[in-house]
Length: 95
Ligand SMILES: *[C@@H]1O[C@H](CO)[C@@H](O)[C@H](O)[C@H]1NC(C)=O
Image 1: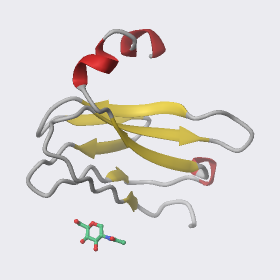
Image 2 (image 1 turned 180 degrees about the horizontal axis):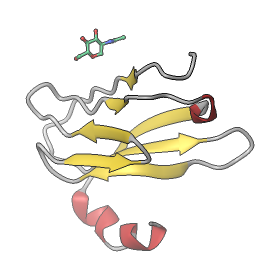
Image 3 (image 1 turned 60 degrees about the vertical axis):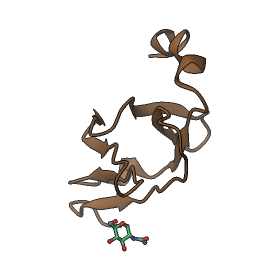
Image 4 (image 1 turned 90 degrees about the horizontal axis):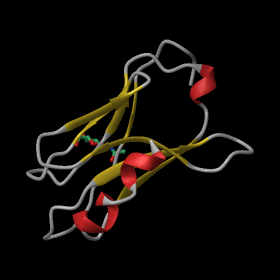
């Protein structure tokens, strides 16, 4: 939309596990890149004005940004890890 609006991209999940949750962003002509992540319930991930809170009660991880710019036009992917241990080794390097 126009710049200056706030925006939310909803993400809900169904799992009995407590996986790490991620938002990836993919700008036109580029590969997906990690935007933010949260490891546990009630943890908030934030980056570049975006934020998302890990909520196991509502099983949501909605991505929010207060002031959306034209340059935020991209594809946003919500993702979760199957197991926390699976990402533990490599995640830091990717940041
Ligand atoms: C997004 O989530 C919010 C809060 O859970 C809800 O009120 C809203 O209806 C959802 N929007 C869509 C498009 O699902």
